[in-house]
Length: 107
Image 1 (tube, rainbow, N blue to C red):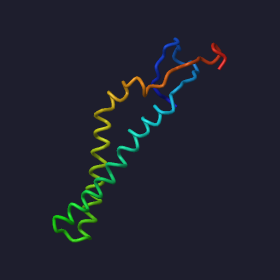
Image 2: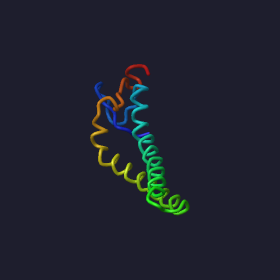
Image 3: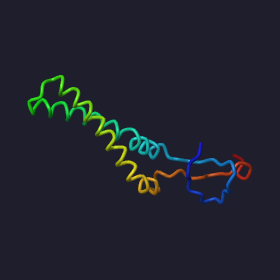
Image 4: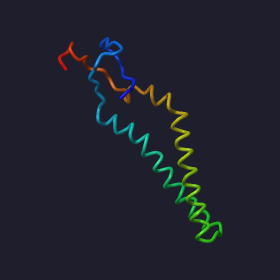
């Protein structure tokens, strides 16, 4: 796996290292990556479907366009994540930290 981690112990390129990421911080990262798009998809489908029914469309058309609006909301959520990617990556609490180097700290 390749990832960027906080290097406070002087690890060099090519070193095998042990990293640490708090479980809660890992869950926050997973929520951003998977939860936000899932919620956007569900809200897009439901909002599109019920909104179109309220606007007078028949059920079949509302279902089809509701699915399309859900996919559009999903795409927008990924665009938002991509636009916020740099600020998310810079959040200290979401960064893994190198806590040991194999051979030096007897990992």
